[in-house]
Structure formats: C-alpha cells, structure tokens
Image 1 (cartoon, protein in one colour):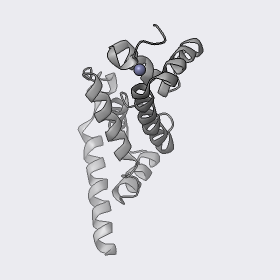
Image 2 (cartoon, rainbow, N blue to C red):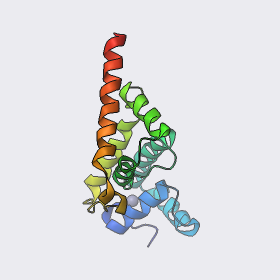
Image 3 (cartoon, rainbow, N blue to C red):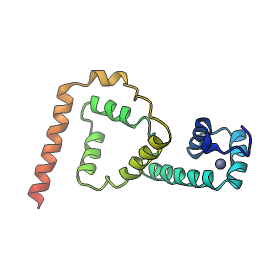
Image 4 (cartoon, rainbow, N blue to C red):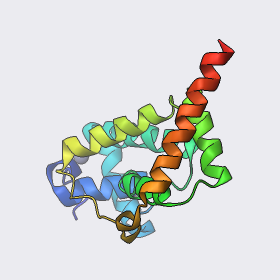
Length: 152
Ligand SMILES: [Zn+2]
C-alpha cells in the first residue's frame, strides 16, 4: 500500500492500523504505516485512540482480545467453578473491576463503528455448557449478594 494513501479510506487500511496498534503488524509494514501517520492527522488520531484502548485492555488483562472475549467468556462459563473463576466473580461483584471493562466496551463500539462485526465464532466448549455449571455460578452470585447485604 502506498505511503500517502489514507488508511481510513479502505477496510484493509483500517485493519492494518488496528494490527499496528495491537503491535501485530510486520516491521516492514509498520515502517510504511508510520511514515504515513507522520503526515496524516486523521490516521494519527485514530491510531492514538486505538492505542489508548489497547493500553487500557493491557492494564486489565494482557491476553484479552476484543474479538475473542465472548468466546472466552462462554468457555469460562463451561468450566467448573474453579477458585480463579470464583475470585474473579468476587472481584466483579464487589464492583472494583467493572471500571476497566468500560474501555473494552469502547473498543467494541469503536471497532463495530468502522466495520460490521463478524458473527462470533461459537467455540466447541459452548455447546457443552452444562446447566449445573451455570446454576452453580448463579448460586455463587446469589450468595455474594447476600454477603453484601449482610455487610451493610
Ligand atoms: Zn491517513
């Protein structure tokens, strides 16, 4: 792709920008893109906004991907209630960890605004979600709510 062609005009260009912001663009392509960013304010602003989103995501969980989040959530729901899951649930229900979820929602909105989201892939695990596992999780939430009420 030419250095002076605005990346925001084509889908491939936007994808390249997103890859660049995620640190996944090949070094040679990144050099070309950077020389375009140097002379294109709209692309620079787009990249800056994306990088802010990515930094927020990194601060929350380094491995998280916007696209894979729902799949991971489904997979996690399919798992038995491991201590790690319970800890996460406890942190979430206490309201401490909800704030970092906001930039992720922003990432979703931004990403959805520039390209129609593909249908989320349904992981194999999702088909194996056992009602008991979900029920157990809901019971945990219930119990935590009770604890919070008692604490008040
Ligand atoms: Zn541009």
